[in-house]
Image (cartoon, rainbow, N blue to C red; front, top):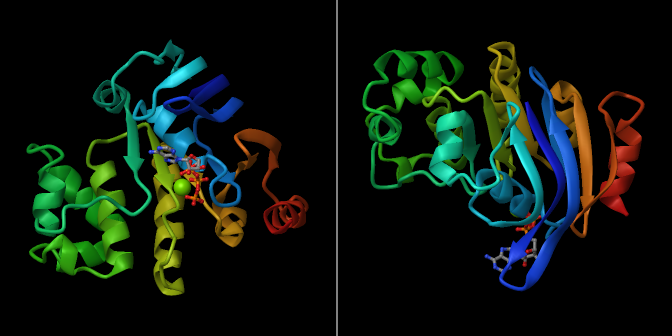
Length: 226
Ligand SMILES: Nc1ncnc2c1ncn2[C@@H]1O[C@H](COP(=O)(O)OP(=O)(O)OP(=O)(O)O)[C@@H](O)[C@H]1O
Ligand SMILES: [Mg+2]
């Protein structure tokens, strides 16, 4: 579904990603792990076209998307939940969802089945929601566009454990609905519960990768702790 081949990118003259290759298959949840500042967000932004690729190839459903604008990538079916959520604090929950697309009443009901709490909060301002509620809203907002691939940047960062479980369940359900997921996540327990494959990033390189299971879990822990 998504294939990244030998990608270099960064900011102005500084290169952050040094030849990254990875793939996300249909019906899978792929996790990107790595310590702070190694280039995880830069990788996601490069896939989305927010950071310009300097070299390499990004393929989505067998189409080379290197030169497409971010909104064109979104139209192809790539959804994005940014680090820090990026919702509109002055708009209500309903307005935050409707701003994505006005003809979405039926899909709003669908996302409420994943996040029932949002239905109760429908008229509350985004900025007045708790961190966990804002994260649910950010994911719901991306789902309104019916993506084929959902990309999330640290969805459980700074969120209390009970809401983490809601997000885990939602991601599992999202996969069951046929949407592939690429998620940057430091919470390895979450990845063990629902992830299929991981890539470990260090200094802009993929230095380890593998299937996520009970056997690979200690390796993933060790990589993050060193
Ligand atoms: N807009 C920018 N302009 C210049 N340099 C940037 C910019 N954004 C990030 N960087 C630099 O690129 C490198 C990688 O940053 P990035 O945000 O991709 O890391 P990350 O792995 O997502 O970190 P974190 O775990 O803290 O979210 C860092 O050295 C960072 O300072
Ligand atoms: Mg980041």
